[in-house]
Each structure stands twice: as C-alpha cells, then as structure tokens.
Image 1: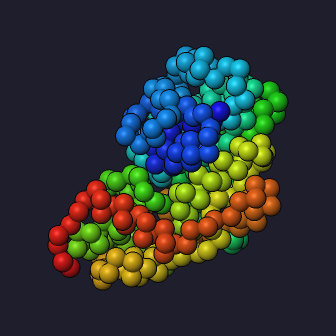
Image 2: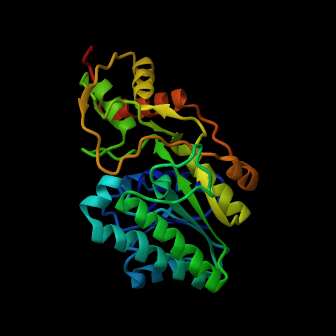
Image 3: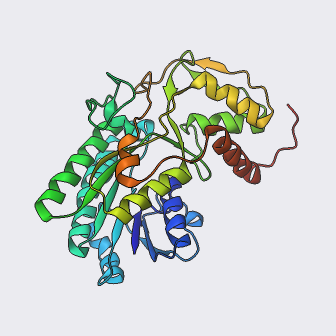
Length: 312
C-alpha cells in the first residue's frame, strides 16, 4: 500500500496515479487547501486531513493497519514565493507536518520518501550539484525543506524508520499549478496559448534542471520499492537557461515569443543542475522524457484546459 500525502496536488497526484496503474492500493491524504480533488485518481481513497493536525491522521492508521505501507510525503507549502508569503504556515506544514508524518510512519512501521527540493543547496558552489554538495539555502522555502530533511533522518534514526529524501529539481508537466507565481514553464506555455509576452526575470541566463513529472513519480515508486535510504537528487543532469527554454517553447508551440524583461526575484539562484548518478545506482532510476517531449505533452494538456482560436 502507498500513502501519498499531498496526493491531490501536482506531483502527488501523479505518484498516486502511477502506483494505482501498477496494482497498488493507494490512500491520498490532502487537506485540499491547494490541492484539487479532481486530481485524485479514480481508485484512490481520499482522506481529507491536515498533516499539522496529527489527530486527523488517525483515519489513515485505521485504513492501513496490517498492510505493508510506504509513504510518499509530498504535502507542503511549495515554492519560494509561496513560502515567503506565508512563512509561519510554511514552517508549520513543511517541518512540523513532516514530524507528524514520521510519527504516522512509526505507528504503521512504514517506509517514508520525503519530497525535498534543490532549494536546499542555495547558490551552488559547484556544478553539477551532488547530494554531498554544501546546503546553504537562500530562501525560507529552502530552509524549511532542509529542516524537513533533518527532522526526517533524526526521527528515522531514533525510531528505526527506513526513510529517504528526494531532492526535486524543477518539476513540470500536466496539472502544474497556475497563478501569478507559477513556474517559468507554465508561464511560457500559457503565454504561447494566449499570444502574450512572457516575463523573463533577469537577463535570461539563469539555468535550471527541468524534470518531467512522470519521471519524478517513477523516482518515488523506485525508492518505495527498494526501501532506499538517504538523499537522492531527482533531475535530468541537463542545464537549460531561461532563454533556451523560451526558444524551445517557441519551437514546440509554433509561436514566436518575444519576452518582456523584469527584475530578478528575491530567492532565485543563478544556476542549477543535478548530478543524478546516485539515484541511478541506488534506485535504478533515470529520467526518460526529454525536455522537448515533456513540453509538448504539457502544452497539449494546457490546450485541453484553455482552447484558443487566436492566431499569433
């Protein structure tokens, strides 16, 4: 059985969906504050619960008792901007909530895979980023995720829980969260749909490691299957600048995008790319979806939501 906290969200719903497709019984735990119940895949059992309220997790214990359980812990206040806008809530959910889910794992004798973030590294002192690279987060979000890792491994050692932390790089794909602080991939693709000029923060030279959500879901299942322990980078190992991404989106969509420039955002780093050798060796995992193919799939999904008859 797989318990997916945050399973009504972007990444969590893909983890739940993939597990169901492989015959797993799945429980989704989500307070629906940012998740969408429409994201919960058919066949999963939804428990509406807030991970900061441990008494609300008792229903999961009732449903899962006696089963061999793995927990994919993705419930979080996610993203640099979201965390800085609600710092107390971000720390409560990302740190205290993680401690509560560790207690759930202890009571169920369950394995736990934590969704961490490349934000824990901060401005890199070396590239590509290895799991052993210094962790110097420059955003509250990164601080909260690093604290969540430390809570996870401290309590895991104390209670004999097998646990891992998957440091996710820039995840994109269907069911991405919209809004004014959406990811650069979402913003570029929706700009193409609407024939608008997307914003580039800074000069466009900032780089990221964009990893497709289906590959991320696969990494969680590999970790759970192998009961792997430790920290693992989940990216592609390929560095793409914002300008290169814009050109690729133009090619995929057939819309020539002319960006508007905006100042860099606080908490944004200059460069980022993962070394994924450890995940390859320990999890038997490697990314399979190219950036161009992933953008194409994401664009097709967006077109089903916002069909456009405009010609740019």
